[in-house]
Length: 463
Image (spheres, rainbow, N blue to C red):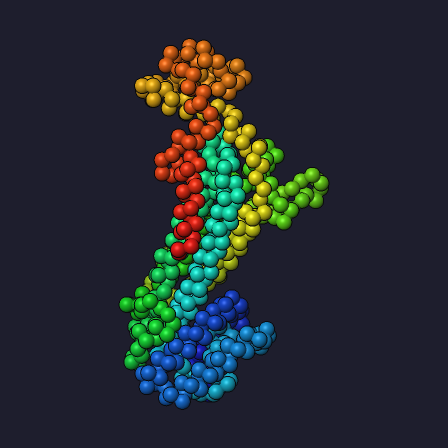
């Protein structure tokens, strides 16, 4: 009988339909797991030697051949295309048999592609989480640099996209720093759950060979081994968690992008993007478009879609492994690629952004944004806040009708609304005092923001 080209062909007599073969193939995208699968195979080989399944000589032969395959793949760009394969795992085994013959076929003893794939996926994702954490840190660094460069600059704070209260520009930067800090912490938590080794679970029931799974796990730097073989080969929670965490990163980047896009318009003109991160119009010569941030905002939906796709794929699968789970890879790979690229571009934009301090200051001191300060002033004089709020509403209306800011109203006009208002009201309405009074933890006073910047720097250096 002729030898099957597949790892599973002995039970089959007929040839598979060519269209189905192509539909079934994942080698076009799962070759990204090549390095992870070689690493896992080297550790599994050592486990087989320890279990006396392989002799030491056979083990060394297999490991040397795996290293040869790894080296060849790193230097020969056509290496993957010379041997048509169903997936990266069958590719490596076929190359192994090419090099050392039947001894290469012994490597698959005690494992299935089910636990093999899950192990390679976890190894790849563990490295990718580490890479994404570095990208998050780089974006945080760019935010801190921007904040420190403009630590006394003031911009309007908004609710409902209406001017609300003035805040330090650095305070705005630190808001996004905090979002990314949560993202960094989530990635660290996910990494711990990713770093569990399923190898040794075989197809679904575990292996009959006395492989020291803990020793293999130590070799691969896994923190622990899976406790249930059925769960180990069918679990893709770690993929969903990663995609979900990446979705939150993209959500935060999209919100930042939206702020930057708005602030870079002529109507706001608080920010200007350098030529390095903006584009022009093919028709209108005056245009400078924030395409970099628009793409970040747009690509958020792409990552959200991958999260939903993973959940939808997994929701109805019976235990244990099902071929549906092959769909995890493209979703996870593209999630990483897109999120990493978005973080890198965002960091670059932040490093190529100029703040128009005078324009921002003018906006932050107009529009009666110190109205809350006037209400707080009256509260300090003994007026209940709801009554003070109502009084200030009438004062704002008078200022609007007079075409002036609150501090532009004469004292005698202000006293018409409350006899408690004295000359000291003007100090309370000043921008300096408006900021300084927000001195509780988390507030926008210069003192608190300076402390927050120092704490942020300390976090970056210690984690």
